[in-house]
Amino acid sequence: MARKSAVDISPTRTFNVAVVGLSGTEREKGVTGVGKSCFINRFVRPSADDYTTDHISILSQSDFAGRVVNNDHFLYWGETVRTNDDGIDFRFHVIEQTEFSDDSSFQSFRIGKTEPYFKRCAATRLQSAEKLAYICKNQLGKKSLSHFIARLMYWTLL
Image 1 (tube, rainbow, N blue to C red):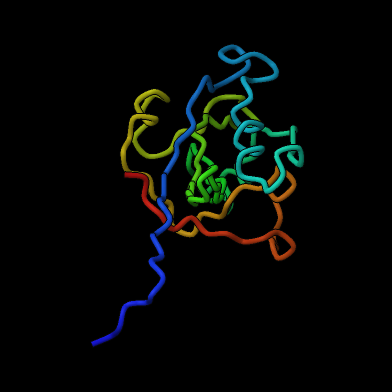
Image 2: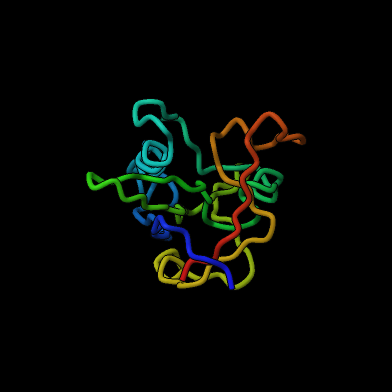
């Protein structure tokens, strides 16, 4: 029988977080949006002041079908670990619910069963095979993502 370690290492608590908010075309959200991407970007980065402010929701068909967006109306931002004042670590997996529009028609991409944004946001299970973590808009449209850290989405939001 294996001996237990003398040090009690408690497991890191993990939270799956889906950020929702106003999404859609300029008519619904205005020209600048509401700041979901900037908020998340600051949260998942090691330094809150080292973040990207330029995020887009109007994509080409090829960018929408690429491994980062992966024909889904949500972005996987990856994971981050935060430590509270008592030294306890908490792991967060973060996705952003959004509405991507086609750059040629400026209409929302229609995929599978077309549910309104608010119904998609209420879904309790999200999966996307081979989806990569979103880092910045510059990684969209790249054939090779080798210079970006490839973090696969491997969890299911429950």
